[in-house]
Image (cartoon, rainbow, N blue to C red; front, side, top):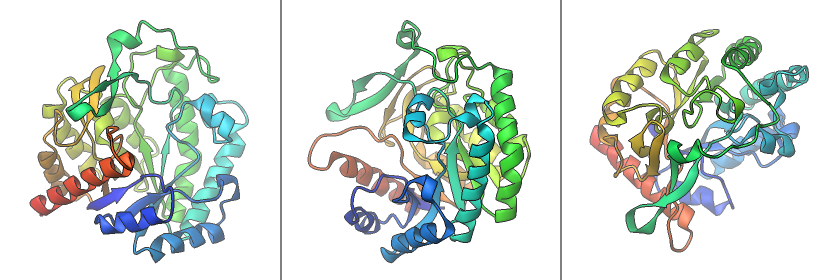
Length: 327
């Protein structure tokens, strides 16, 4: 395992910064719209990343974590999750992308099967005034967010749409030797919130997901923070969950972030100050022979010059130090 990042590239000097900070692997963002992705231009993008001494481990399918209404405006895939007939075209295009990714020499893709986005309540403040992403169910349940363009989606409907997608896409991934890394639903919300039952918002749901169309190339973008948000006591429970999915070789990428709190009541914090012993967590990833990226995610908002890169730089250094301790 090794330190990675999915941080958005603002300019080419960011690639140099990653290298200087000891981050040698990235989940990248091709510079052209997904509608224009081909094996040739994805190869050119990979070669550009490699010119900075970096390795392009994966890219994201046009199935992001944004709320489905926003994705529709951006021309990303939404019909896969609304279940209407247009999903056939999107699934066909997904398969084309997977084949192009393979031909271009990129080994993996990540994606979300997310309808309502990443619900949060008003941010709170932590160490030194850092702004923290926050979710308090007692506040969220008092609001009445409108339904998305997907409307009401029951548990059975959601599973049917996931099953239909996997049935078509997993065989192509296997043939192309491209790992599919799916992100859990962030956070867990009680059934019916915004009209949706989030089936990938529980550990049992994730266990069911990896068993559907079981395949060596079908697994998880294992967001440790999101999984902790599903748990009443993440500081005790997370380690055996890592073991469960890690021993099945279903972890293809790790979002290595910490929270304070637990199910329905948490803030996202720096890795050194949350409810989970992150050194112990990394020891468990090593124990299960996890072999891909360990990357920060949802870093608190801080002050100063270039606050985003500075906050991420802190987490890169923290991860690198834990790597040295574990090894």
